[in-house]
Image (cartoon, rainbow, N blue to C red; front, side, top):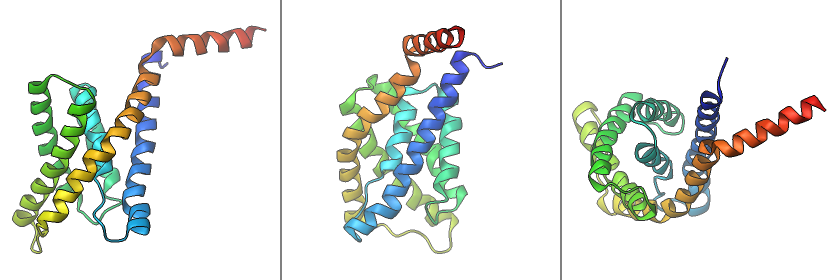
Length: 186
């Protein structure tokens, strides 16, 4: 039987996965519909940065692999390219996070913009090594993505923190469970 901690983790991962689907759908469908060919921010990457900053190491790695698998359904990128890029990004951001020792809004937004730049750079380098038709650089396009990722990461931080608080606050879960027990006995 599942205890409350496992149940909270399952609900938190399910909610974050659903949010990741929405972020990917917004970036790949809604953004081009509204803004045309203007570069879109890597808003899906902000969730992965949040996972790197806030979650335990092994849970975060597993969840990043899972999100990478989901991401291939929204892009034309092969799975090997996404997983290699996310692994290298995870190592770099996790190391940087341990040096900064801050998980506040400004460090999150800065790490999100830096992650956008790193992900693009890593992806371009790996693409030039592994693919016959490598990804092009488009420097101004990549810089615009980084800037927009920084801007969009600010409101997303509050959404991620709210979800994290809901599923980590045991008082809310205990009071709702007690309320449910009282309803069953009456």
